[in-house]
Length: 190
Image (cartoon, rainbow, N blue to C red):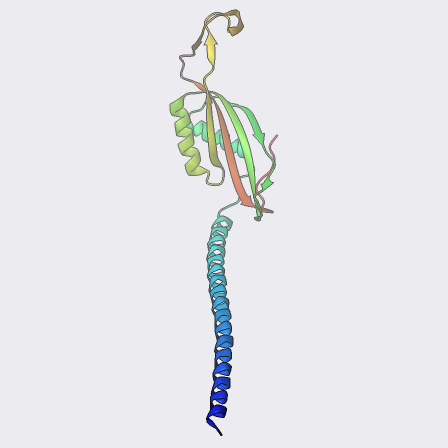
């Protein structure tokens, strides 16, 4: 073998080695991107597992709580009497249960209007309700203190209105109950 043949053979071997290194580099780059994607998917799967565990623990907590009382009006009247509210329920409206997004839970909302309630008595009612009614959550309390006309109550005749000094309010309570669909314990009230 001549010097020229050895040189040509060395060039061919070097070219083959460069091609092999290039192909291995491509495979290595592809493997690294696959590994990075697998790590990201694994992290996402772990996060979803943690979220599912959290939701399952919450579901168990909700399942362990007793079903809501079927007669909300009677429960309201008991709490009103124990708090010192002497006025009867003026208006009551119970909404139909609505699904909560893509969960097996439903939400039901009720609104109650009570006339002539002093603020300290209302505060006692809220405290009693929150401690004794864990399922029906008090979502909002709206107070209305209507102006009273000095003479006839007609504001269109130019008479000035003043505020009633009795310190009593018309109260509208919005109650909310979230429960597992299909569980007993809720019904529409008249």
